[in-house]
Image (cartoon, rainbow, N blue to C red; front, side, top):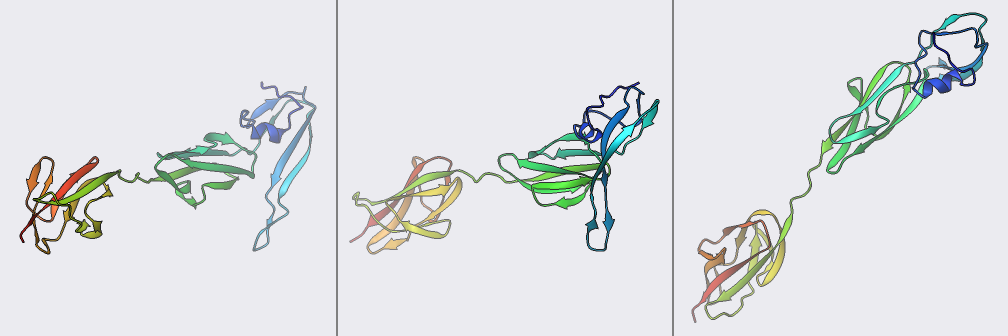
Length: 234
């Protein structure tokens, strides 16, 4: 036989989600027990009217069983974030529960699903608990951008004279040689003109070797320097 203090209202006790009153027996020592209950109201075709809580005082003059409608709301989250509050909670019928979804780094909140169906695209949402429900937050993975590195592109002829010629990286004109550019990590394609006046392209030099193709493909996984080599013919 379960004993409950008469100083705690039924609604507050249920909303604490620590006591399950369903089917519990109250002894005659509890003569007055305050309570509140939710009235769902009347649907007038466009909205509900007269919704709200009503309260009263229960007087028990003998042993009896108290049955209450105390639906459960289970809140969870998929990988990529967490929900607050989480877990299973009991609420007074009609309680408006507010839930918040928080994404981890490199994830974005996507949606709430209620009992497997779409419910809301707002990361903060609320639900009127009038039945047992499962509410789950879902997140999408947002991968971080690939790192970038400094690519220094030099240009000289056989007499060690610097050259400022047009430079293309991945087919896009980016500027002139003898400068440093920030590029995305990975395979980058470099190209310079085959002839500039009396200067003729000879080779690319990087990674300790000459590479005679123009354009050339360079592996950039750290800061790197490459040189476009030209031959001058007067």
